[in-house]
Length: 402
Image 1 (cartoon, rainbow, N blue to C red):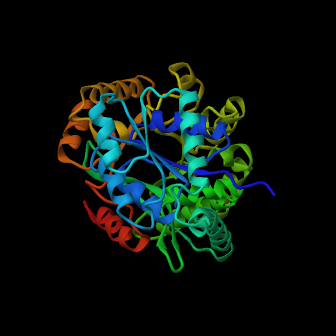
Image 2 (image 1 turned 135 degrees about the vertical axis):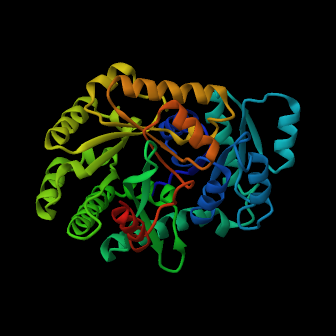
């Protein structure tokens, strides 16, 4: 019986680096999960212990040294090998990384062959027990993965998923103008599980098409309920996986759901990442054209991660660009991020597209985006994702405002 491929956690705040490492490591046959910051990485490790962690040093908030120190100080995670990643090549960075508990160090830009060898050798040492206390601990990641897979199968059967909604705000008026639907799962006996953990597993199990269809149904039913109430209809965007476009019958599903719920198509927006747009491009363009003809809006999520060119933008029937959170995070302190953000806004407006900035958390970020001409924002500065009951109070306030 073939052994399960090792699961590697990639922790880096740069989307381009995460995507590059994912591509290289998946090509080598590994399973990958990703985190964009230290806090998310610690949460992911608790929920799904990886076989190895590739950990960037320089990240906003909790840096790689602190993440490694916390992991190595906990008996439950101390045995997970860590490879530090850094653009800093000086000896001091290496020493600090090793002092925090990392086993290896890789300098950026990362060479494919060196990455492959260091990961393989470190996993081999782990497999031989040099970094693992006993067989039970060595087998635990596979056991955890199987438990999670079984729990997700049951979650689909038992309808354990729920949808939370994060408001979007129109910068010109300061008013709530739309929502993003976000999938959530409270695993019985474990609590909330990060989507960064369970969504990739749903994809690997072939369940994401069914779950994605359920989300669209739940969202349209909710829009319909609001439409019939004092709240009124609200535009809602739904994240769609590339698997739904390629493997499922997304167009027919959406047409059927809109007809059944009586929701007009323009109240629904479909969000896809740049990466999913580049998969099976001709099929994707044809599918999005059909959705656009129906009246459903199309948004590119995480824009700026580098996959779509200006030529491709013109080929896709797009209504909205969402600026990747990585640029917004340091838009007031990093001149390059500020320049990229302004360029994206100008580009979008030149193509008659609206622009949404996600991950807005500070007044300084808000002021920058207003000055740059951004259309809409979402983020914790205004509101975190909310359950329906809490959200409806906000929506009622909006409907009662003259």
